[in-house]
Image (cartoon, rainbow, N blue to C red):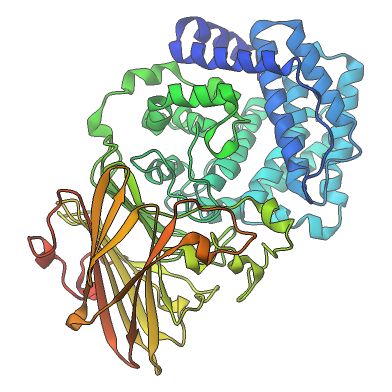
Amino acid sequence: MRPADVARLKEQIVADPVSRRLSEVLLRRADKLLTTPLLVRQMRGRRLLDVSRAAESRILVLAMAARLTDDPRYVARARAELLNVAAFDDWNPSHFLDVAEMSLAVSIGLDWLHDSLSPADRALLSEALRTKALRPSFDAPVGQLWWITGDNNWCQVCHGGLVAAALATWEDDPALAESVIRRARANLGKAALAAYAPDGAYPEGPGYWDYGTTFHVMLVSSLQSALGSDLGLADFPGFAVTGDYMAQVTSPTGKFYDYADSPTGRSLSPALFWFARRFDRPSLLDWDLARLDANLAAYDKGKAAGGDDRFFPLALLWWQPAFQATASRAQAWPPTSWLGRGNNPLAIHRSAWGDPLAVYLGFKGGSPSGNHGHMDASSFIVEADGVRWALDLGMQDYETLESKGIALWEGKQGGGRWTVFRIGAASHNIVVFDGGDPFVKGMASFVRFSAAGPIPHSVIDVSALWPGRVSRYWRGAALLPDRRVLLEDEWTTASAPVALRWQWLTKAKVTVEAPDRVRLEQEGKTARLIFQREGGGKVDLAVTEAAALQQPYDAENKDTRRLDASFPSPAGETGRLRVWFVPDKAPLPGTGFEEALPASLAAWSGNLP
């Protein structure tokens, strides 16, 4: 943060209401930190990550408070935090994310408070960065350095934290610093292409978007500030539009479409403030500004959704006051139907923007084999009338599983990862064949997508996830103008009969009203599911509480249950099941629009190139 940035922020805080509110909350947090005990090098399982993140949070807050107020108390406390973590024996290079995040924390403190620290302090912190972060990134065992050429969030986070350290220590070892920056430039392209191309859809889900992308923009921002160039690291395909992905995976109720290892709750995202400023896209901040009061109140209490608020001060740094003037422009809403292609593709269809009661359909392809992947390929979530009727449970805290001996990262077929309820097939809104697991290395790809006309829709080819059981399996989803959602499954069985189980996970009270009809009740609202099997075949409807499907090591999933529709399919059969989601006051099937969608999914319009 340069002197010009500090001067600008001080002026903004006086003149701009949003800047002032952000700074007031930040200073209250800084005041609390003045009497908080210093951090202790305490591992949680195999990780030091909680401590590294706490250091980031504290140092960011205190360093910014010091620059904005010139209050020596904040400088003194930030100095104490910096010297404390610098004295740790190491920053846990066996799990290099811990090193990267601690590296970023110390680098920010050293840079932002440079003139307030003594030469001895600066030398000590520089030495800590070089011996505990930069040199280990070259000298640690190869098995700890796989992230250098990786293609996921680790690559972004580790290179981002280390580049910050390289810039902060450049004067003390320019050769080492240059090698770190050159290495990042040479390797980040692979991760960025995997993460954002071509439409900005992040394959590890919205929670990891916030993680990897925040470090990516920190890297870009720090290079631009220190060198006058970002070295092209913001020019990757899909990167400029990835903010649109975050808008699309945020539902009308303000929750994430929490596929893969993602949290359900969304909190303020400083990275989006950077994207809005960099690409002149104020609409990217619609959600953050609309919920600013709630987000600031949560930050004040240390209860940010998802439990993470350590980068909050960056929102103030990157906020552009002129964006407030663009708050009302209904004509600029994003598209109501959106396809995010890439390694873990997904489609979003919603009835409207700016309406918390809108119908929202999230529908994804992909493969369980992706980083942080779940057995959620071809799954969906549905919202209407302010209620999430069909849900994804998102992630479970890793340490709660690893501490109980679960092989959480064993992602092979039959591996320990798939025994976790929130991760495996049992908790996702998919069709399960013969009660088994989908093929882990299979890929579900979109073969139809249409945002045009009265019925936006998407179709996924899921055949590769069920080899040996089906020769072909497609799943389609459509949003009708009368607010109904149609889910259609179409399959051809292989050489043996199979048993199908269609799954819908929900927190609603479920009542089977008829052999083909279910009533859902939740939060004072009502909806229905209507099942239509081709040829008039029956389905067996059953409801099972999530607790009965879980193991002792699984997280509690309170008030959650799964509706199953089960039936057999003989060898060689081409079968079809249509399921209608009908929110309150929407018409029942047979009252219009159905003729616009042919029975065969292959006949649905919207062929993809």
